Amino acid sequence: MPISPSQRRYLRSLAHDLHPVILLGAKGATPAVLKELDLALSHHELVKVKLSGGDKEEREAQIAYLAEGSGAENVQQIGHTVTLFRRNEDEPKLALPR
Image (cartoon, rainbow, N blue to C red; front, top):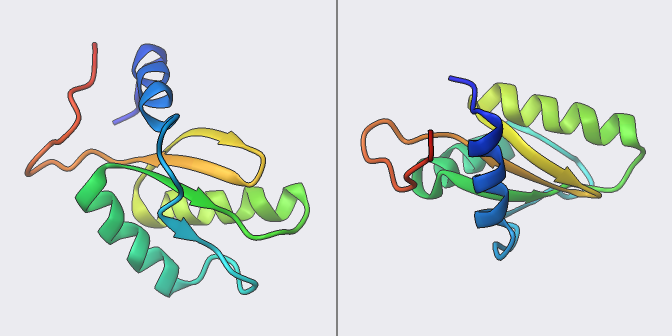
């Protein structure tokens, strides 16, 4: 389910004080990282990921791989940090505005 612009704005405000939970190393986005991201999204719903170095196209590919592999929405990307959101259908933790 895509998130609306007002929900995206709300999630960006919540993510402001968060620290990255997932840090990508030299190998980039791997299946093991995707598994950890899935666990983090199930627990927190809103997660910051610190991307590994590289050019812009490489970071975009990492973001696409992580978002598609985990079923998460890209809330925002600033530099080497991306914020991802996926609603926990069983026990929602964040109440989104309409």
